[in-house]
Length: 407
Ligand code: NAD
Ligand code: MG
Image (cartoon, rainbow, N blue to C red):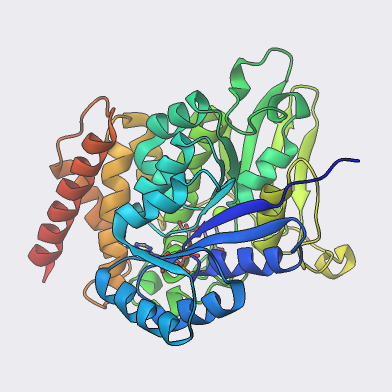
């Protein structure tokens, strides 16, 4: 008789959209998964209720004040949950020997250090935090390979691509394998699908006046604010292009962005014999999360089965790089290479925050990214984590200067 070990999970970004979808999937399989640690930024109220429900061994908050607050509340109910904070706390719960799997679902650059540490510790890494990979591409992939991490893409498109890849390429270290270098696989192209976001049919003039409220109201997906704005500018698809480039070792000229408004096909892979494999499903992140948790097995995710008759019609369009210049900037940054994608990511994060704070207009997001890329000295190669974090800080300062100059 084989006894399957319960997988111990550290969930980074537990209070977010991916965090709650992950907990929903885990709640359906108490025999398979156990939450070892939960982490969040500063939302003590939500974290406290998660603690009551999940009874993790550790909780990590971003700052000392939130940690003290939750610790106080936990002590009042005589809880034995240990509270940590900051980067040191995150690193501890990622590297802990008891942990088998790290779900990397912090949004933005804040997730880089712990996500990379999970790869370095050779864990099963469920990567939702695409910004980490966009910032550190080669370093992240090399680290995952060298330490035999099992890198599972959670982003729905990349998870779909992974599912459409041949078994011989994915059976060992999942997407860590060098797809292009495998003889006989016959992979020709990746078709990365995009919903087109809430403003797919808007003119450039209409785009200028859209509000943060409209931008975060995505037609098909319910997500955090930052990724919702990224979906509206098509920056999300650009970041995903860079993500696919690194995860699947695929030349950018072999990756096509396909606007598919129904979000039923989550991406496709084309083969030399003319076959096109696609992964379909209702747009619900619990499917890719369940797949990434259980692979190579399959588990119930709670997602309703796709009713193909309800879908009825699937449309495909070319993306418009003029109305959505963020996607063009991503193509250019990946071609430039070196530190360009790190700079682009930093500029985008600062610009999106300024847009959400109503300091700039929607179309200014791309303008600011382009200005930052012009002003920052792009280095040809970017090797260490320290270099990457330095570039991030420098680029943010320049984007902030550009915002000030716009006022
Ligand atoms: P979200 O804003 O809903 O949640 C973000 C989480 O990160 C929260 O738990 C928050 O507390 C934590 N966090 C934020 N800043 C932090 C900081 N400085 N330090 C520590 N923790 C911090 O975001 P989300 O929509 O869940 O997205 C998370 C990641 O997953 C993003 O990188 C996003 O691009 C990616 N992703 C999300 C979806 C989706 O459907 N939501 C789909 C694909 C990929
Ligand atoms: Mg996606």
